[in-house]
Length: 533
Image (cartoon, rainbow, N blue to C red; front, side):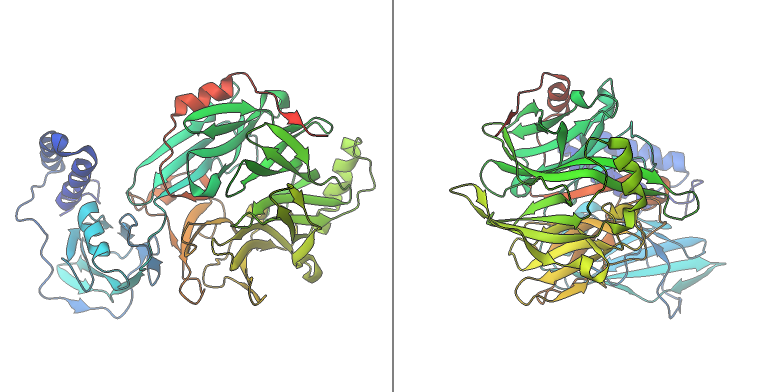
């Protein structure tokens, strides 16, 4: 029986109370039990006898039920939060059971199938490598129907427990409500670790980067469009936060996209002067391009920053390190501007008209740790030769797979509906699209977890407007699986939540430094960055 809300049943309330007790501990159990009872009475229902009973008589329907989100025939981690979903089939009452080879079956009622956290966790942990089955029953006009079973594979490999990302309005203007958030993938716990609303100027908050997927050493950048000098890079080390300028003084350009070397004190940056243009008639409303972009190397121990590249006709961006730190990968487009670097307006007008000429290749420079010198650039993915643009290179922890986002042109694939994920086998040289993972609209920014078997990426496949986070699993042969969206306690949240997720980074642990410490650092004095000659 559903209450007046149309979705919350006695079983839903019971499950919610159980999850709250688990999060708050035994001391909160009695109080939460009383709260659950009050909620049940308010809903006009009372719960007797534990688990809802499955229908004894029903008609079998030979099709998969329509559920939202699409958790059908995918592969999931054994430590993921419950895949709560909404049954989109019409009916009066709903019951869902979930089970596998081992352990107890979970049965819940309601159009929103919400599974109790502890029972879900126990079921998955007891069935690594097995099939997880959902059976959906719908009653309509007094008759029950059972749909074809929904099957998913439980991977034998766990995913890193935490995910950091940025929440931002999916508009085209300067964002004034941006937060950096972290989510426990094993539960639904989500919290800010920084937000720009606490600062009087509400600056734009840029990309964050963690060293080796650990959270005791990371950084992020923030900036003000109207006052660039008031921005800075927040460097976090061992519970302390410092604001550094991270700016090339000879060019007056701040560092943008960062990449920690897996070990040591070095961070590779790109330095970008970015511009936007808008389309009036195209479905692609915005295009982003760089007036200038080069690479720089920052020493987090000495605060020294030095240029790595300074070529007028080559635009370098999106650095990332090899897993062992032996090489730096990045993207480069060869476009020779006719206007001078100091002619900002002239260069803006020129490059806006030549936006389709920006086609990036993926490059690599070897790195000698002892001398801190780089080798000559070599091309790894020659996307421009086939009229394409390769962006956001990331390499699996074992160094065997390179994944990038590919679009027709440009440097901001999140705005490109045709953007897809591609992979290169670094041992055989084979390049291919990640067909099983790609959707119909803008699959872009991605990162591996520490096992290299899981990857998170951003996608606009659902509606073309809002970016959501999806996960895909690489099997023992290196093939990706159909992705699934980040689970939410409220399965309808993505249809009701008007913010975009981007820059997803998987981490092995929670970010412990407080929001206040980071905000105080952002509002405080900037440590001097020494520019190397």
